Length: 168
Image (cartoon, rainbow, N blue to C red):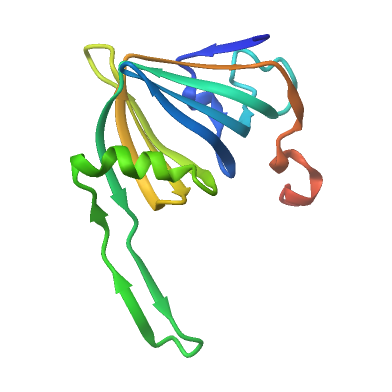
């Protein structure tokens, strides 16, 4: 691949990126994604603006799944009356494989990377908000390192276009 970003997950913007494939090889997790945006802080983006990556391979080495938590939500009618109130649900570890496998059946988008931390022993922990065929959930896992590789930018990030810029 032409570009390779190592341990720079915080130098990407993920809103509306699509996970086209999610697979596990040994203890590594690999995502094939489209429409992530390399920010100007990313070492591989030498452009003056954030750029959209056409398709990338994201690799997380030595992962350990911490949790999958399905989002809480409420449904109200047009008058504001509560119709449904669902609390957050934490998935059981024995269900993780099935949830992740089913996530890309029809669609799988990333809303955001909610957190990224590095511990004193050098491992990372990330939490991604995923909306996939399994539902809307927060996926938290630890890993030893990450790489994002790609060949092409498809243009400016969607939010760099004038219609999305706030007028000053």
